[in-house]
Length: 250
Image 1: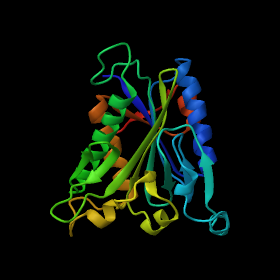
Image 2: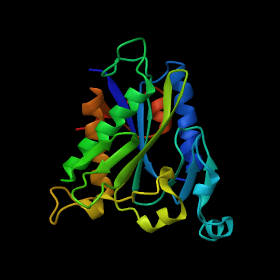
Image 3: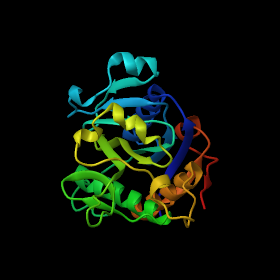
């Protein structure tokens, strides 16, 4: 079985997350490293994808500046989204030409890749006892609605592909302060609201909705969906040096 490096960075500024991705993408394009999954949190930040409309940022520049919220225009697909504390962000750096589930030609298509990421997050939510699903025509992962209660968005996905290598990725709301989403129209969607694992779990949940548990669940599910062994890496430098001393993740 092939493997994926697992790099957990804790809470880092958004610029640092971009720098890490840039280093890993360059190394993956050169064939110097294996596929890598970066898991982290960011301080409050708004990101605008390639299809974003500025009017979907509802808060004024003055309000955002007063609260220390950065705004970044980036290359991923999708509209505007929010990252912040209590939200698990994942940046998979994956060669779509590799041995991946569902690949029918020389490379896995970006849409099929996004479906795999959705499956990872659906499985991870289920470990917390939270039923989750896809919704046709709307990228991301959603709770299961019923009757007069519509589904809610629990995870967003937006990816970029360059030279067959992916970057950017997903954001799973774990203990996120959902009031921060009031600064934007999340992903340009006006008729649904965001939610979090913390709000959706039963009492008591089968697995407590903590960031540590979310990181572990997403790591396990990523390995399961992609058919890879997850190999812990201590640092970016270790991965770039060949990760000779990395150890398997149980």
